[in-house]
Image (cartoon, rainbow, N blue to C red; front, top):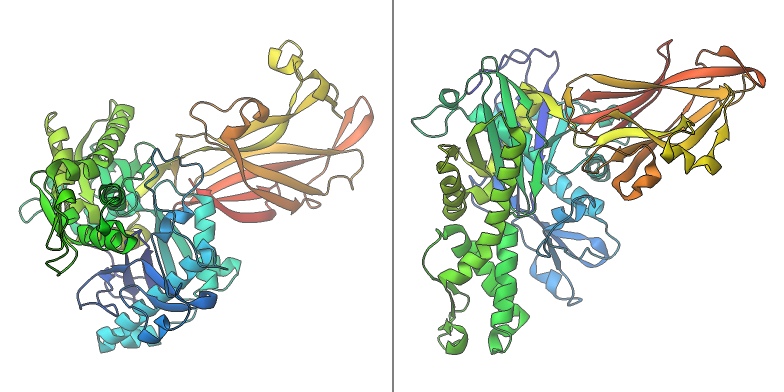
Length: 591
């Protein structure tokens, strides 16, 4: 199903750069859009400090005193960096997890919580890493061949679009932080026009585009042979920190038109959690041994991460070498000649909790989809290369004649490649709202309603007559709704005043409901399930005035629409009125 893309029809050269900042490894893909030329997705495959051809680099930053960046990725600080304060250089990894939403609860304590350098926040670290990724991309493209160098040298300053991938469960707050990181890294200026050159995509949707764009799942099988109009597939993107599950239904196979079938899921059970469980177990196992010191634990955990974790197939013991010294032996804890033995049972205890959680998440998606049954499943991401993970999921699905596949191309760059495809191919035409969006409002007081009677002391007189109750919730876009790109959702609100000059400025809070059921009528019924994304403030003096009459005489009304509009995966909000003067336009959260 690899799509033949049309030639670039723009009049100016344009570069699309996709950054996949991962928990353990990161990748960069790009497309050089040249008028009249084919648009071909390519990956950056040369990074400092590692062999040519590697499409990913470690998600690591080394800091010195004062937050100075000493090295990034596969590079390491020079010898002089170790001559000062023994606390530096500070190696920071797994920092991606620090940006995760508070609304996503984690059932275990294995999610990394790395300590940031003094004076640095997570946006600063993202900025440092994005800046390095950009430098690597420019260096690779500029050195690739003469045509690529000429293309890069001829680009205007505003001719680069950045596509940033993030886990399924992330939304507006995380997207805002990532955009701020680009500004701090000086990759874009801090302006509305520059913000338009930043796009976001969930890792699940990027992986879908990668699978469809790669064409083959093996040398013999084409993706198109597995799908037809109306068929449903599930993408399981198993990375370092998270496993993202996304399910899609094909409205059309040719041309490709895909709709998100259900709310995507995000499980914090990536490969890092396997290492964390192993490290915790090894620390307890060696607690009373001379090898229980932190430097030994780290060396063993690192070596386990490097080979045994990747190669484990579900059976057999393994040995983890951490020293070349024959005298490094402690038979009581399974250490001989600098090698720690881990039994099959121990290895299973590192893997099984996460795999069980992934399978439960798969089943939850499948149950919610009925009667639209997903029959084809794609496993991608760095963790997908582990045969034990693949076989466990495959065995689980095989009992119902369901098919699990791994694309035969390098799935470690699935998200980066797919993020570029997402931007230029647009296979997904409708997505599912992850939360309910709305705002606080006042509702007419009805004394016959119990929920109203208990709030009688809060009732306020209204210019139109009667009483109103503040603190109600007005939903505009409901969780689970199918949202087509470029669609709009709006609701009219009325600003009242006795004189034309009253209420010329209006402020509305955009509030989301994250609860499992329908939102309650009043926010105070379940305040913990609501959260404010931001406020929209606007001058509405130009909105048309209507004169109305009430018990206190004539008064002025201005009708203002709160409009939610969608493009790609980012929600935008504006206040508008009938003469179509737009008073505010602000980026909001992923839908």
